[in-house]
Length: 362
Image (cartoon, rainbow, N blue to C red; front, side, top):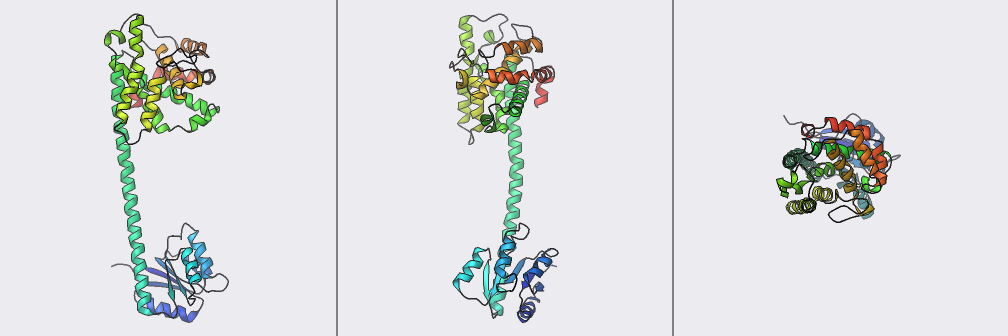
């Protein structure tokens, strides 16, 4: 059995209140109250589907009560119909501006009164159904976005792993890079370093996009990537091309994306992590703060991990020695401001270097 809708009828005239009750009682669950104050007391216990509100009442009139209803998040969605003997346009406009859905004039015309109430209850019911449907769709959309993001992350992880395998890099390089970056950024935020730039970053895209910083190495031959000794000048020039090759590859992927935020960060990481503070880096020879901040922090993370890792051409340095080399590069290879931050987290970098693997970043 369908429960009848609940209507609160508010009128200081007890005769009008009795008339309203008699008209509505056969169809609705009616709560007649003689004042706005009593209405608010009742609302603490009853949630109506509609309120019939007399506009002209002593102490707290209908307009004041309507304004209180609409400013309260608990009550503001309850449809309010003004019941009044006032027929001026200004009075009606005032009520509508306060959020009332309709005006019904005294004396009551029963069929018209019932039809208007039925119409607004039906509209309110449809509105609730649409809100519930929208909430359900939003919930499904959030789940779907999460699934897509997880799939993208998995694909990125696989691509990054393929680059690692070609480079003969110890497993977990891209994972450790993300952890180094996160560590540096946390320390930067704690110390107010470059806070305007950092606060503008979207970290949902920033750290995952760092996985593509060495994407361009896919285009470098094994003879160069896996060479056990120093590269010749000609081989090094070829190796240096991986930065721009990575940017070009990311640009091609970006063409198929509706939101390019992820690829914006990926291009910066890929294209600027070999630039140096003194301008002697590659591929563009950028200098100082002309190097994007993302590239400057990536340079520290990438070089540190290269120093503590096994490479075909070198044995790993200890974390202490790697930190010393990084610090010595302040003002030449690395941003001095960031090196001051790095000095505060060398112990955390050492822990990451010893423990982070590809599995840790899933």
